[in-house]
Length: 369
Image 1: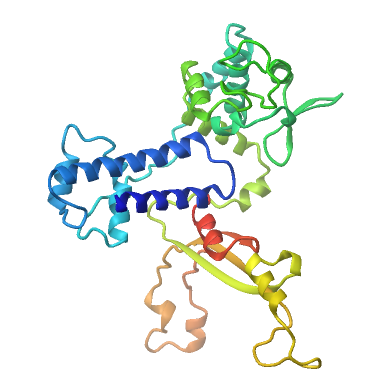
Image 2: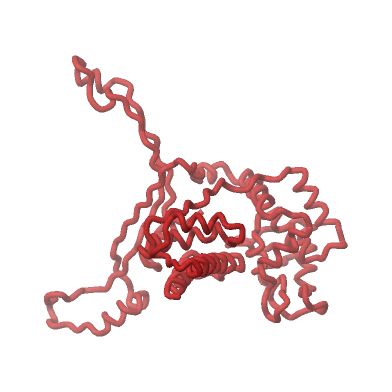
């Protein structure tokens, strides 16, 4: 039971760290539940065999993995690797599943055929037509679509815009009509009458939006493959970006590329109102011993650690012998004028923060897409 509590705390801490203060989606919560259930299934089987994680051997783990009744086999790997890292289990190996890259893009003709069907088919409910078009045209995931409110729709005399990020996007005329219709109606999928909910896609529970899972299921019933559709939309949006922005965007690293995470910190002077709680209280308790100078241990100001983290690739630079040392009999001038192998400039993606702690900034940079 203690192991279950420990892995539960670990999963919750990791979920909070990766969410970075944002709302947790249904998909993220479901993944955590699956990992926890997988740990319980494995521990229950070990208990029936008279074993624990400390006494479990690789042969016992493989015997559980090959059973026909085993559930959540892949998800249990996260628990096994965590127990090895915590030194609860020893000599256990559970390889991670390799990510094979983004989903394959769908056919362009099929994508536009689906978009025309959502625009013209009046038998489909307005909210699902609008949600499908936001996924097809703007690569919005169901979790982001379900969190939209009526305040995200901006109507002016010239156009109708929807705020999907920091900047509002102008909607084409057919999509704008669907957005205004849905904003005016806002009927819940569980209630036929109009609701007063601020959510653009109200859910079955009063005052709450439709869940990301429910939104995804309704789009799948319309024949929309979420991952393929979003990948296609992202590729299409990338072709519309200015070349200057694309040139500064690092290309995705291959599975064989060595990635290096570098982190540096520097204390910077902060105003009292921007100090962390513990530092602010320590500054308030501090008293000056002398008027004209500082005594031992006293500080003129309080600082806060600013963290700069960068992830860059480190492709090996293949060098020949004469790139390092001149050949025998060659002068220094001739060696200097010889052809040498130039090292490829690394592709980097930096981030900096003075609001979050070093561990949070480092984790956010490493898990940054």
